[in-house]
Structures are given as C-alpha cells and as structure tokens.
Length: 97
Image 1: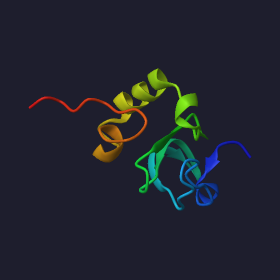
Image 2: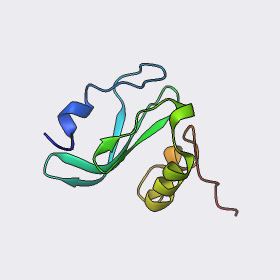
Image 3: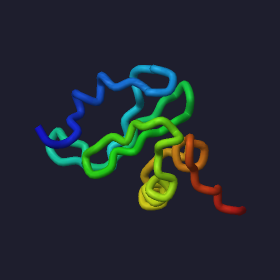
C-alpha cells in the first residue's frame, strides 16, 4: 500500500505533545492518497509537511530547514497563514506592508 491514505492520517498524533486529531490540509491528491499536504497541531502550532506521499513527523532538531522552507514557499498561497507565517519550527517572513 503505497502513499499516504486519508484514513491512516486519522490515527496520527503530534509527536511533540501527543495532540489528536491533527488538521489535514490537502494540496495534491490522487484517489484516496495525499501526495502533497500538511498536518497541523492546534496545541503546539507545529506543522508536518506531507511530501511525495510521506508525512515528515520528526522532532524539530531532526527536521530539514531548507526542505521545509521550500515546501512553504511552493504552497504559501494554498496553506493557511498559521502554518506559513506562524508555524513551528520553520516559517516564512511576513511580507512587508
């Protein structure tokens, strides 16, 4: 069973604070698989990208800043601002007014 299926995402909890359920933001999907997206924890404000069908749910110190900033730049217009500009551990700078 390749890919991240929606029903499997329902059982995931935040690895930092164990909050469940996580909010799902689908960016691209195919049938019942999420190809690109994000999971967000409303308790600790962390987001976990889904890249190439794989949820990246690592502790902050093991996450790749460059990869995640690229993800945020690519999807900034489709993800909520709470992820793009306020999410942890990495976020984009708000545009100046």
